[in-house]
Image 1 (cartoon, rainbow, N blue to C red):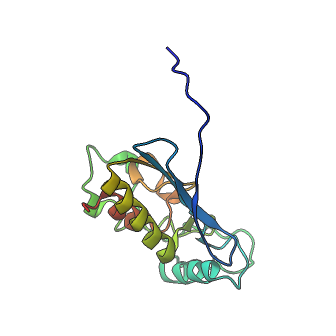
Image 2: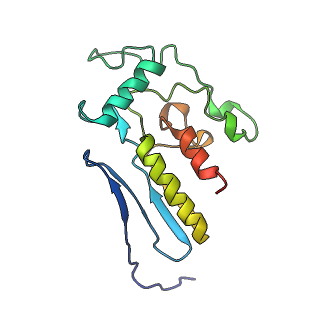
Image 3: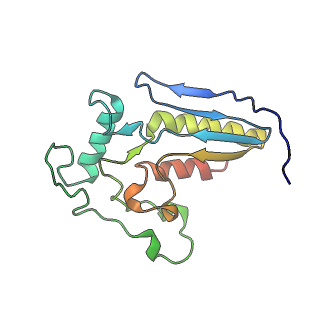
Length: 168
């Protein structure tokens, strides 16, 4: 059975900075909050002068021993990177150990939300919970290990999950 509904009035609360990238949340219906994250706010796929690029470059230097910041062709981004396949584990994995050892996500084609956006996310989640809303989170990059390959996870997926699973 289809239930007819009226037009959705969408009011977006946008958080943006000088980079032009933004994330937003909306309440399309009473009791529901939809949050869209910009999982490439921290990433190498942007101008090198931007904070997001600089943070991603720092993460690459810290977690990826390969010359991924060079312009060389044919570099294997995954050489010497640790990580276990999420498909090899049986049963649920406690949140505190889901992402701690996975370095295979620190490759040039991935990205992350960054500290500013995580602070914004925390405020949005707290406000939604105070209203009793259900929350849907959208992100181009996966944030939950069991739902994806560790090679495609957002850099800060563990921090994002802690925010979403925290008791307010």
